[in-house]
Image 1 (cartoon, rainbow, N blue to C red):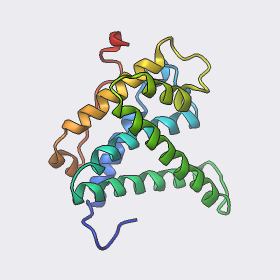
Image 2: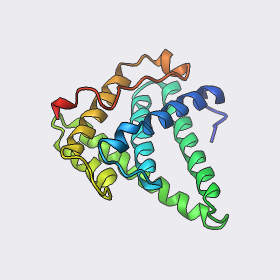
Image 3: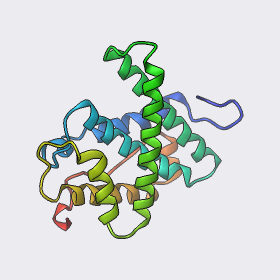
Image 4: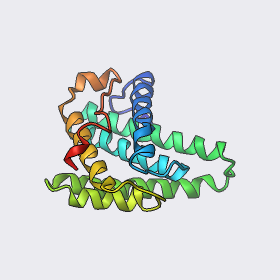
Amino acid sequence: MFNLFRPAASRRTIERLYGGIVAQSRHPHFYAVLGVPDTPEGRFEMLVLHTVLVCRRLKGGGEAERAMSQDVFDAFLADMDAAMREMGVGDLTVPKRMKKVGAAFYGRAAAYDGALRDPDDAALAAALARNILDDAAEPRAGAPRALAHYARRAALTLERTPWETLARGEIALPAPDAAEDQT
């Protein structure tokens, strides 16, 4: 949670930033066109992807940016906790499931970060297909590559986003359907 010994973004700023992450992860194109399963699991995976991308950008910056990365991650965890409780998961079961959420997040973060370092989209497409599209009933042909292309564009957009913009809680990510002809 918010640490007293590091600079923390305002709660409102984190809410706006995390709200942007949630909104982007729910873009209909991912589900209707690429075939991401429109299920709690599919929505979770898209939320993890976008949270990882934003945290990845922030972790590469200064102290305030790294602190904001932790705050965004904390907002993600709070959201997952609340969602489980809304779905009726019992108070005794939530902590066990939250451990799994944390492990899933860190595993995907490592996979996506490593794949984003490779200029070829093959490793990123494979990681995204395994984590996001594996349970898809009907993923579009080329969906893993299209999703990898999108994730790479989103990461680049975030890298180019000035800290001052993020510090205001503003996030702009590319449209998921832009430039799909490159897949």
